[in-house]
Each structure stands twice: as C-alpha cells, then as structure tokens.
Length: 110
Length: 120
Image (tube, rainbow over all chains, first blue to last red; front, side, top):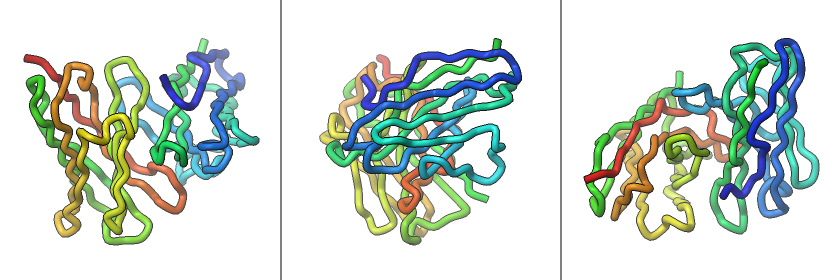
C-alpha cells in the first residue's frame, strides 16, 4: 500500500491531454519536492519532472508538473503512442525518513 | 555521461543473504550532495524504495526492512553495495540503483535493473 496515491489508469486519444494526480500529506508532498518518473514496460524508470515542475534536458515541454498543498499533478499534452507507460510520483517523507513512491498510473493512448 | 549498472545473483535461496553491487561512472560519491539509492519493483507492482547512501556516508533505510538491509560505498571503485539478509520469495523483484541528487531530492539517472528471484 503506497503512501502516495495515484489513479490506476488514465487514457485519451492521440493528441489529447491527460493529467495524473498524486496525493500525499504534509509529511511528504506538503514539505518536499515532488519528482515524476516514466517507466516504459521492461525498462528502468526515467526522470521526467523534478522540483515539482522542472524538466531535465531532453524532456519535451509536453510534460508539465505542478504542486499545490499536499497534492501534485503531472500533465501530458499532445499525447503520443510513445507516451504509453507507467508514471510514478515520488517524494521524501520526513516522518518515515524514507523516499515514498506513488502506486503508479498506467497511461493508455486510445 | 552518467551510467549505473547493477550486478548480482539472479537466483537466491530462501533465508540466504543477497548482495548487489551498483557500479557507476560519470560522477563521484565524494561530491556533495550526491548519493546512490536502491529501489526495487516486484513483478507487476509499484516501485519500492529500499536504501540510500550519501557522499558523507549518511545512510537511510526503508523502515520495514531496516533490520535486513545494509548499504555501503567504495568511493575509489565507484561502487555501492546493498546487502539484504534472510531473503524470502516475496523479495523477488527487479532491483534498480539510481543516482540521488541531494539538493534537488530526485533520482536523476537509473541503472537498467537486475532481476532477482528467491526460490529453492
């Protein structure tokens, strides 16, 4: 049972937009940066967003992140078939003194 | 270019100790605020954080596994080793190591992962 809560799945047609929510608490998201990771089946996770809303070099601006209070959101616009993957949020938790990840959200391009 | 790669046994007997090595390049674990963490993923399940070691030898562990885990670093060799005692079939998973940026609080580079099966 994950400390951070994500919807199991989201889907949309090519070119459309999806958003993925990540709900936590003051122990984690409320006081620490949120990161988002993309995991294509059979591959390692890849950093998409760090410090809530920043993109590493090479990540297209179709991917965006935001945070408000104890929740964070990942947005993907202009959906492509290559975006089909599992997406995880992550943050430090001060009560656990441990990193916590979300339960993961599967994105399907219809 | 930053690279990490995990190595270790693919099959472990129940009750045995698992030793995994993460060998990396492109950064040094003597540099503030770098760290290396271990994360695992059971088949079909979510990511599960295990342990983290920082440049200054600060170590953190998953609370529920703390008694079974040990993380160490060999800075000159650019390696981080994770040991997990008393392995159980529920520990079957793909184990990843990743670079931790302690300032940005994120895992910015990951190894490809190594599968570990616990079975007799």
